[in-house]
Length: 78
Image (cartoon, rainbow, N blue to C red):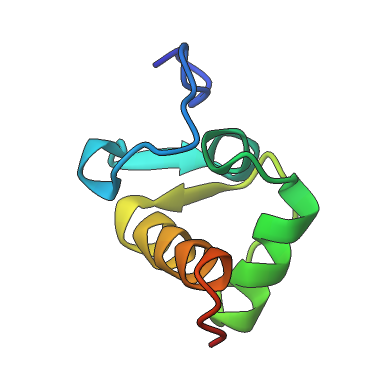
């Protein structure tokens, strides 16, 4: 992990248990193999007030996004 919250070696299948305490939206998008806009849309749907890809989110919120993205990849919409 670099100082700006970007993972040094991003993998799309990173388990939520390996997420840092805080990370930037763009770093989570990279981990998920997604775009920052898609992650921001998920965050908005979850009620998180983030404004940009450089916003920082905590692990709990990141885990919610990961679960949501994984659910959509497996045909579960929510």
